[in-house]
Image (cartoon, rainbow, N blue to C red; front, side, top):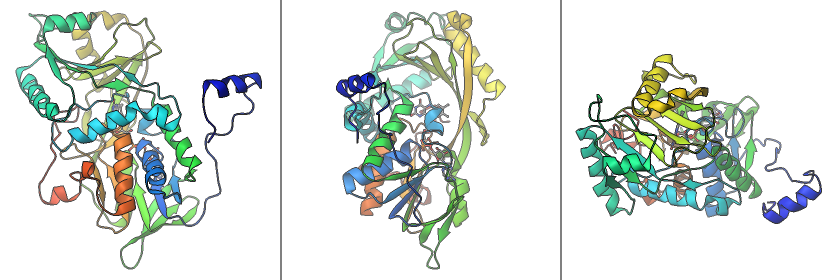
Length: 416
Ligand SMILES: Cc1cc2nc3c(=O)[nH]c(=O)nc-3n(C[C@H](O)[C@H](O)[C@H](O)COP(=O)(O)OP(=O)(O)OC[C@H]3O[C@@H](n4cnc5c(N)ncnc54)[C@H](O)[C@@H]3O)c2cc1C
């Protein structure tokens, strides 16, 4: 793999940037691999990378129906945090946040990681009780969460001028999560793709999987694609909102529904807010990008849907909520708006498991799954390679729905 460094940048500048090697190859598609990973989003690419790096499994094809990194990883608002509620979740997300912090070095690709703290603006007593409960559990696992007063909150975020004593929802206090950060989503996809490719993993773009193939014994045998049949004894489904449509081709129903989540950005402005602001009672969050844009996300649209645009009423609700706390944002021009379709399980926790179809693995239910990409990839690769779950993901099984052992994060994130 070509090393990226100040030296290589200078050398390539002298030669007019004509001699950079391609970041990944486009090899011919073989008809058989040891492992097929469907979906070149963050989870698919990270799984392929850790299969090669940690377990020496390099006969891997990642099949992507569009272009790599063009799914939800391209549509998300890049909030990385570990302030979850359950004993099963927090260590997993703590690990993922830690891995993100070292990813630039590990992949030799600038992730533009910015550890910038998340501040929750608390406006109701039930929310405060829930966040304080999270704080106590997070303490056990070394994740940071701390309550601050309204005055401290307003000092920290000067643009927060709404939510005064006579507002419909006056601000009660803030909660500060210093481990949170943001980074560059394209870099995550490209960095994992480049490093996986360098170890022999093949990435095939414009290769849509149309159906999963099962043998007479019920085991997975491979996949049918728009470019022909590809055989593999192990197949990983990492297709986000499309999980159920794909697994149904193998006669497998999963406890997931697909919903639409939206975001939008403002015009770039001078540095105004240096933390990620989350307003769970009002239903929006935002951070300021390096370019100066406000990157704003709202609550999900509650209906099941595969749409990737933004519904007008969701957009209006989010803007109204934001202006009630940040009235000066009224002057901001909005530049772009978009949505993505994500699958979510009943308890809003992920599913990373081998399914009832032997050899078929899924990584799904990633409602806020960008932050989970490093740990998700590492732990799923462990399961695929060794046939046994990594301790950090041992609770995120399909069996929990059979035994009603939910890892209930519903209601504690933007996921309702
Ligand atoms: C508006 C919005 C904001 C978000 N904000 C955050 C956030 O701040 N923090 C956070 O942690 N998470 C956030 N998320 C969630 C996050 O984006 C997803 O959980 C994460 O990207 C899922 O990663 P993935 O690899 O599973 O899916 P994706 O990145 O969607 O990758 C799946 C890939 O599979 C491909 N594919 C689908 N079907 C097939 C097929 N049949 N054959 C071949 N390929 C196929 C798709 O083209 C896609 O490239 C947000 C999501 C949205 C939509």
